Length: 171
Picture 1 (cartoon, rainbow, N blue to C red):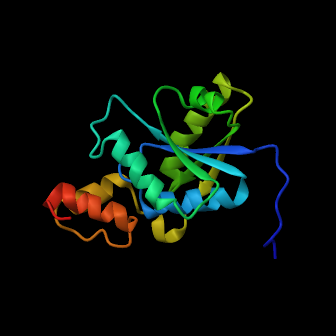
Picture 2: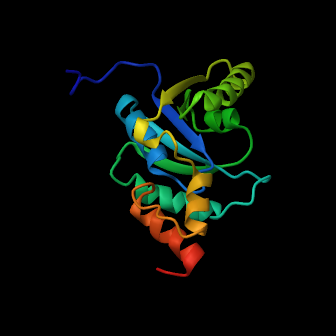
C-alpha cells in the first residue's frame, strides 16, 4: 500500500552503528529496512579499543560494503570515539538501532538517553529485528564457526567464507 511513497522527513542521514564483528543477516536486515525509510544511511563501524575483534576494522568495513552493495543509498565508514561526535562529523541526525530482545532495549535505551544528553539534536530510533534473526548475534556466529557449527544462512555469503578462512584456513 505504501510502495512508491517517499516519506517527507527531517531525518536525511541515518547511522546504523555497531562493531559488526562480523556483520550478520540480522544486521543486514536492519540496514536494508533503514535504507527504505531514509534517503541516506551510513553504517558506522566502531573501532572499540577495549575489544579484541576477530576481523580488523578494514576487513569489517570491506565485508559490510560487500553485504550492502545492493543498497545504493548506504555507505560504510569506520569510526572511533563517541557515536554522537561521529554523527555530527558526518551531519547525521538519526541513529538507528536494531533490537532483538528486552535485554537489548535496556542497554540501548541507556545509551540513547546518554546520547540525547550529549547531543539533543540527534534522535535515536529502535527497530525490532525480524523473528528469524531474534537469536542471532556476532558472538554466537563466532562461537558456532569456531566449533565447526554451520553458519550458513546466518551471515552474508562473503562473511561466511571469511569466517571459514579464519577458523579453518579454507577459502
